[in-house]
Amino acid sequence: MALSRLGLLRPLLLRCSAPLGALTTLAPLGALTTLAPLGALTTLAPLGALTTLAPGLLTPPRQTAVPPLCLARLYGTKKSKAKSKGPQAKVNINPELVEDIINLEEVKQDMTAVLATLKDDFSRNLSIRTSPGALDHIIVSTKDGRFPINQLGQVAMKSPQLIVVNMTGFPEATAAAAQALRDSSMRLNPDVEGTIIRVPIPKVTREHRENLAKLAKQFSNKAKESLRRVRSGAVTQLKREKDQVSEDTIRLIEKQVQQMTDSFSADIEKQLATKTKELLG
Image: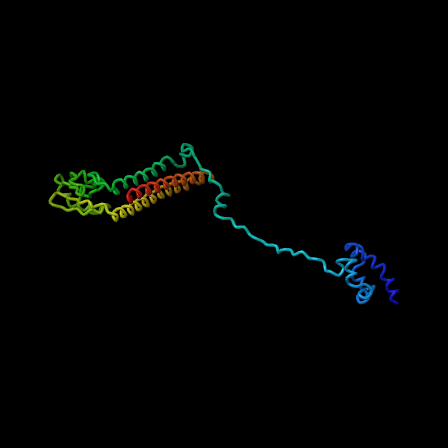
């Protein structure tokens, strides 16, 4: 009986000596268990011999671990977005070509006047050094009109901390001149004796310097507001012409006006930075 079973298994054992790929092709594992139960195999051929003839037959195939797929979303940063946009192209319109729509030269002159006023305010109101001309910007309101104080009285420097204004020529304006000095941004406290106004100049302390720096900031903000009003007036004028001019032309002129506004705004910031550094030391 054992010999007959061995005869039946001889072709199968010959196939087991073939490579693993051929074994799986010629005889699947299910066919092997059909021909002979596992107990017969272990009786006729020990497990060691079977694994020697066909390595991998009873050993499950090795599996390679596949890492899970990781999905990541890349978010653009502000710098990358700015680089992708690139530098904005500047508009340079010849004012003569659009003079029928808007006078760009006049807009530029208005903005230049705003910057000039700021410089004048800085030099007159925010000077640390004392001189007779430090009071020239003060305007006195009288019943006959508004006049600079140096046109109503004689201004003289008696000492580094004292300025004297002689109002003998217009004695009736003495009280108004003293009030104008008190209301000025220089924070003066004049002393009146008849027609003579004595103006003590406060010492330059750290607190005084800081107050002047705050005043410089106020002047610069006022200049920016004036600049925005000039821009707003120009844009309003352009909108009145939208029926006669194409939208592209209007858009280009608006961009030109905005560029001018940005340029003068940058100049205001430079003036403020320079004056603040001068005041604070």
